Image (cartoon, rainbow, N blue to C red; front, side):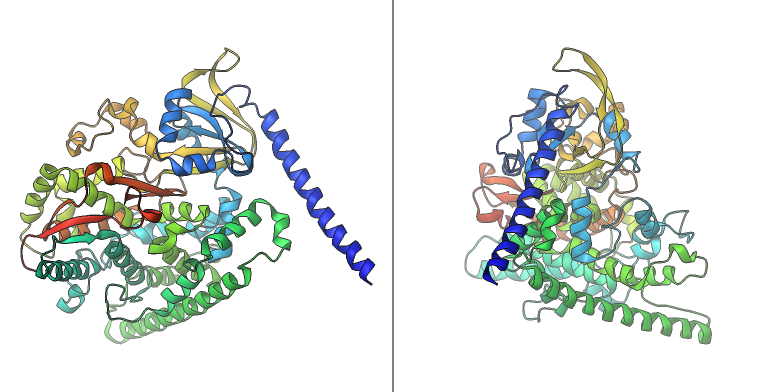
Length: 586
């Protein structure tokens, strides 16, 4: 019996060893025979397991430095030493963004995303992705369902931390997350002043909690009450923390990523698998209850409409999605199943939660897809603290609004606020990069020809199926070729005279690459922009923002594909302090 067990064990070990040798040889063969390797230069491989991954992760300026050395198009090496093409050539980027059937999300991202939050808009590609976003349903103009849901006037009126287009009760208004954040910081500053302190606030903690409240209220009418220091942690928040914020969360999700990249590892019971499955199951149970509650409210709304001829029901994202999904005008083959509707809840919650920057790589793609309001707001506050004249000009414009409850139309009519917002998102994009993988062989056109290692001039590059391409968002946004020699400066007035070269930047908004372009662009970008305008309106009318540290102590930290302002040398980059001085009582 013992001999048989030993033989079985050796067979299993031999099988895994043979697979890994085969996988390693396949990567080696792919790298050695890659046509790009014979054409392009790039940095040397730092580690034959990690490639250049850790180098790039640790040094935010490394891609820009390599662009100066090797040009805008070069090769580097990802995890497992997989060859990766990095390009900020605008013609190449436009081609990639316009070709979703040729270039799509990496399968490892799709696999981990699906395992973590099921079938949703963030974990699908090609035809399945189209089904998640397609519909004959129309809001203000012909749009795809999910895009229309995120960006329609109806959804905009429900954003709980922003001024509304419709009238809102005083009770509801007082619960808006941005106002609760302002009140929380006012209280904290008052306590500090009583002890002779300066009013230094760690802004990330409050911004993340506020974002969590926004996600809950606007997404699915769920109150996390995250800014209440005496409130209980919500059940959904506890389940998420168990899944993603436990001491071993980063390792557990990293193991899932490795299983996605090396499928045979799925046969192994890696540590943390059962804990992750249990926590995700708990979240699904809570999500199903939320869906059922929303359906009950919608049914009551329909009943009221029959009796009174009017219906004034909830307009959170989930309610709008359920109504759209039940529409008789929507073809059956485009409707989402109950599990897919549930997946939208989990994806929306995952993408906005404060803790997600600490987990593995695939999440950062998801975060960039729905956008990081807390990171964008923190970058805005950081920039305004360093440019007091910009801050003062913006504050004067905001104070010219004669109400604390402006409509979104009134905020959108403020030109300097719009310019500041554009400059924040250009100069400090929360998403550092995204990547795509070639689904078929292709030829990638170049705006600027390059001289290859063989001395020949290339106006295009041969792309082989499976080739990973890095899209450097930050480098595109601060390119001197696009924005001129002052591209790295924070200068909102540049938007008065947008250079003609900016028209070549692929993007869904404001001649910048921050929200990408094509079918997989940031679907919630209008949501994020409206939210950021409303937050700045509330905070800048209440506080003067100044640095709490010398400029050399201010930096940024990157985890995967998201960057945030941070204190240089701080553990995990945790926290970002600013001095907030109250301007008036609220």
